[in-house]
Image (cartoon, rainbow, N blue to C red; front, side, top):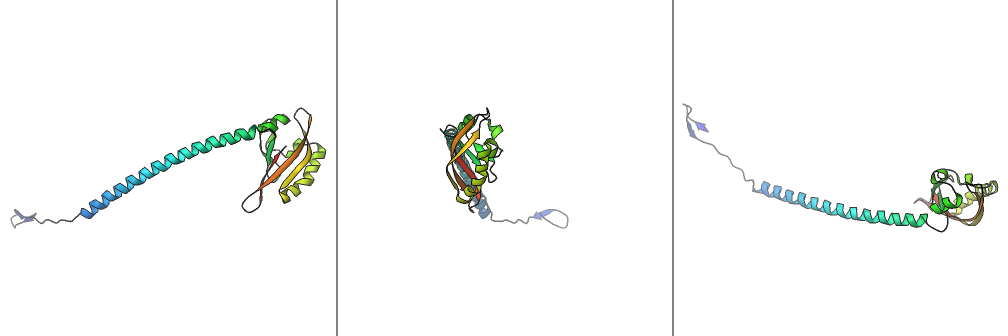
Length: 167
């Protein structure tokens, strides 16, 4: 308000500002936010669906691996068991906990263990083993004679990652 010398209001000073642009910008921002939220919801639903499909496929592959007619195991670069299928465990009589983490040679006859020690560096160099005769000691003491075939899995730098074998 504008007042006179006696304090009475004699007028007013008013200012105004055009907020049309700000309102449009706020509306556009709200639209973009809503659109992004819809995109995120859509993408989240797509990812959830893809994860369900991958999980189902993984279960199918795991089932095939475990029910294969021959034994499969994987070794790390030190020759330690990092994976094994149910078929091989059944052939040898060990539980997964009794088998994994040990060196494969822990389950071989002394002769086969020595053969493994001689052949493993060659396997690491070539990435292949074909029809190598080995003798495994089953949990009940029985000797299991097996032909071992193996392939090396290498990382992107060509370094030994894991070896997979079937018996």
